[in-house]
Structures are given as C-alpha cells and as structure tokens.
Amino acid sequence: MTFQLAAFALAGGFLLGIITGLGRLSTRKWIYYPATLYVNFFRSLPLILVIFWFYFMVPFIIGRPLGDFLSAIVAFIAFEASYFAEIFRGGIQSIPQGQVMAGYSTGLGYFNTMRHIVLPQALRNMVPPIVTQCVIIFQDTSLAYVIGLKEFLRRTSLVDARELRSLELYLFAGFVYLVFCSIGTIASRRLEKRGFRR
Amino acid sequence: MFSYEFDWGVLWRHPYGQWMLNGIWTTIHLSLLAWCIAVMLGLVVAVFRVLPNRTTRFIGGFYVEVIRNTPYLVQLFFWYFAFPTILPEATEKWLYNNVPDLPYWTGVVCLGIYTASRVGEQFRAGMLSIPPDQYQAAFSTGLTTYQTYRYVIIPYAIRIIIPPFTTEFLTCFKNSALTMTIGVLETTGASYLIDSYTWHGLETTTAATVVYIVLTLSVVVFMAWVERKIYIPGMIARKR
Image (cartoon, rainbow over all chains, first blue to last red):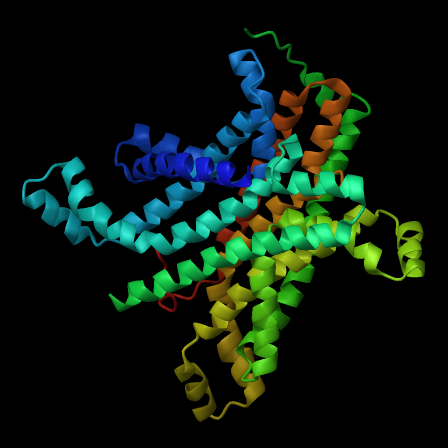
C-alpha cells in the first residue's frame, strides 16, 4: 500500500509538476500567476492539512465520498506537484539563456526548443533533487495514516493495538523506512557526484 | 449535488472559537520551542560533523542519516508510544503522572530532534561555504581567534545561513501539524476536533488553511525584510 501510494504520488506529481513548473516560467501573466499561486499555496500548507482538505472537499464537490485511497492520492499529487514544479523551475533556470536563444535562432519553436535542447540538459541537473524528493514522498506517505488509510504505519499501529509490543514494532517500522530511504539518499548522492564529473 | 450547508459560525461559536484560538497559539509556541531545541542541537551536530575527529564525525553523521531517513510520524510514535516502555517503571509512572501535557512536550522534543538533523546540515553547509582565505586573511591582519570569529566569520556565516534557515523554520512549523496524531490540539488538531463535534470539516479545514498561509507569509515577509536589512552590497551575490 505504501509503495502504491508513493508510486501514484510520484507519477502524478511529476506530470503536474512539469506543467506547473513550465507555467512558472511563462512570460504570459495569465499562466504565470495561477501557477505561482498554486505552488505558493501548497508549499505553505502542512501536508496533513492538504490530506484533510481533500478528504472533506472532494465529497462536497462530486457529491459522494471518494474513498480513503483515492482522496489520499489526489492530495499527494496536488501537494507533491508544487514541490516538483519548483525543482523543474530550478533545473530549467540552470540552463544558460544562450542555449534557449541558440535554439530559437536555429528556427526551432518553443516546444521543440524545450523538447530537444533545454529539457535534456535540465533533466540531468534535476536528477539528484528528484531522487531526494522521491525519498521525501516515500516518507510522506506515512501521513495517510490520519485519514485511516491502511498503509504501513497504520498497519503497524493496528498490530500494536493487538499485541502491545510498541517498542519492537515502531523500531521495525523505523528500520524499514530507514532502509528504503537510505537507498534513495545514497543513490541521489552518487548521481550528484557523477553529474559533477561529466 | 451541493447538499452541504455552510455554517461558518462554528469557527467563533462558543466553545469552538476558543479551541481554534488555542490551537493557533499552540502551533506558534510549539514550533518556536522546537526550533530553539533544533538550533542548539543542530549546532552541536554540525560541529561534531566538521571536527577532525573520527568518533564525533561518525556520531554526527549517524544521527543525521537515521533521523533524516525515517518519517517524522514514525519517530513521533516511537517517542510517544514505545520509548516510555523501555524506561524503568518508576520513571514511566512519574512521567505519566507528573508531566502535564505529555503529548505536547513529546511533540516539542521530537520535532526539535527531527528538525535538528536538517538544521545541522544547513549549519555544516554554511560553515564549509566560508573560504579558508577568510580565516587566513583575518589572522594575518593580527586578529585573535575570538576576534576572527566575532568580526569576520560569524557575520559572514549568518548572512549565508538565513535563507535556508527560513525554509527550515517553515518546514518545522508545518511539521508541527503532525503532533495532532498524538493528541496535541494545535491548529490542525483543533480543526479536526471541531469537525468531529459539528460535522463542519470543510469550514474548519479552510480556516486552518488560512491560518497557515497567513503565518507562513508573515514569516517570509519578515525574513525578507531581515535579509535586506543586513545585506552587505557586493558581499554575497543574490541569486535571482
């Protein structure tokens, strides 16, 4: 369950993040301001509140409850997209302006310049922060606990309620998260080093 | 479709209004206290990690890796549910009987410990980002060690450190919302509690959202003002 949640949050957040990130770089005001508003709005809220918000909000909009899992996923996607958007913006801005100009001057349009010149370079710079963000997402999925979703931590506390072995259980939960997240952290560090060598 | 009836009155009707205000106030002092712990502990960790001593470096590194790679919620549960059970029984009893507001203090300490690992990394980055030439230049002009730190290094370091610290403080502030899971009634906790009494979750959550945005924005604006105030022209290139 934890993995499913993390995977959905990652995929959705990534896509929405690209769109929002590009929106943040747009020179058109009507694209720039909504995107900026979106990013700043979600970045100033605790994730737990966003989860609650969707939990209450979505049934109100579509008129029926959406279920724990789906509403948690929507909340995660909306929340993580704002963080991914900032990573993308940073990555794209790290590409010198000259590259973009060169792209335009060879006759490529906005889309093609982005597709063939800016994004391939920017993505390379973005890999370490993206991996870090994945680790954070993986940790954040534990927050779905609050709306009663039976992910890893909720399972742990359910077992604890039956068996009363808090110490072993929470140490174990911590250890599992530690192992998976360390893999991510180490991967991101190695990627960063490799990036420097290039 | 829109079968929901808005009743914004729950936000100020007695006793819910009082709960909400208490919640906001709790959020503020909880995150400030945790921040104090985090800065002190973070400084220790950072010093540990840059000292030329293998043991302290290992301890510092171990601390940072473990804390940063486990979710805050798991740590919170560990300290609140699991940790008291390994204490001697007398201590455990004393803890439950004599400490008023145990969840609150657990939240403060745990948030402090968690944030310290991140703050420590920022401190370390700040220390390492000061070029060694600065020390050499200061010493060669005849300043003592104390003077070097007081007049050259620290003024330099503070200005480098402020922007990441603002971010860290806001993260700490937002993480304080998680203490609701062990029963601290801060802003999110209060809004959830009111919801469970009144079924008006949408209003209370919206109110909590507004509270967080206002608080975050005021911190950002204030720190931007501080940054401008202490900015030394030409010293650190502003990234814009």
